Image (cartoon, rainbow, N blue to C red; front, side, top):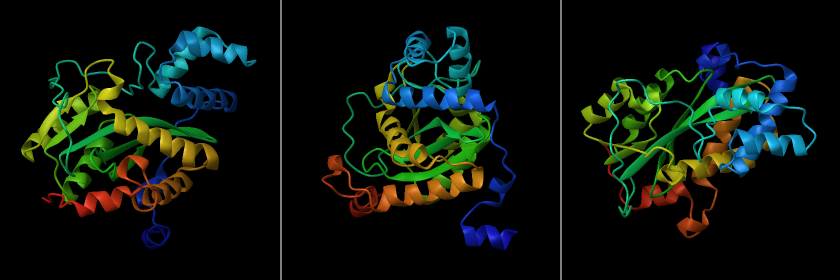
Length: 263
């Protein structure tokens, strides 16, 4: 089994993942909500309900509110928030207002997004370098448990070290294990202001790209297929996809060409 996973480029753990489940009809509705929210991240439950009803969906606002909570989309914020701050956890200040990002490994950030599957859904997290838009690493999970974010952070720190690491105020990122690991590595911790979608704008743009260019098009059915597909996409995104904002260069070319600091 280990050898088969190596040949397919899959992690062994992904074979045992069971995507979080809902009814087929509910999953269809959640996908529609996700697509519209990705296009219009300022939609709250009231506007989302009106938009769905206008398109022939028989839904109540209460149902839409429940589904948006499951998906991690909070109506009162202009960005998806897949968790809330943990009680008693330290909230760090936002360190990047007015800061000019001029080099790789100056600022990394992370976030989590909902990913629809034909028979369920998963959560996707990634670490991105702000200067180059390079995806350092990524992880899938069936739940919003913080352990998968910590595993992702450990993998990212094995490849390099940023000066500042920016997150939202979700419980996964305010947890002492997560912030403590960053401080132990000598990394300054920065956290988005509540309700400030642009504080982590590069990850938000990444989610739009991966959904419109891969997930929505391919309609993945199972977790191993999703993991393999995302592996292909992030390889393409880093090494082949030209970014206008990078002077039509790839994230990998920019990340590796400016003398990024390595741990």
